[in-house]
Length: 207
Image (tube, rainbow, N blue to C red; front, side, top):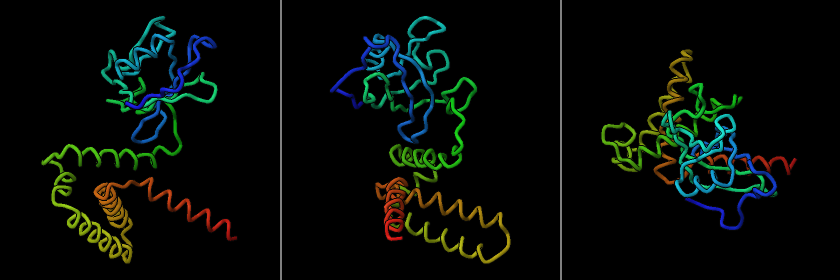
């Protein structure tokens, strides 16, 4: 777990410090809680996010009853040392409603690509033989690249016809195998997005 060794929250300013919880794999903001000095120390010692519950008036480890624990991966302070940012790996839905996040996010569907990317990376590291994705990784980069090529050709073929459902399904197949290829090359969708962003900046500067 990464730690911030430079500073700790300024609990002399506020006994309860707000802690923003963010998924380390998807970047989605999951919830907001509050920690006091004791909860902060417990969180660091156990690597399981623990809050001070204002309603229960005690320390409360997220997931202590539901099992949906927040595994701490790194933590960071804001510039005033009075707000925390916890990057976590959740073991299940974070919100009591059963949703992954307590916030209503307008781009939630787009964020699913990051979730899917995380699942693909897990399949690669776990090497599950029963998984189609893991079997592709086992066959190597040539087979993965071949599948991307096949899916691209199938998408082009469907683009020439009028069946929008078949076209969208082929587009989904291509996207999925494209993410597998990125993972096989130890890269990510964010790496590609960064390049597109840089190209966009260059185009704007030349207008």
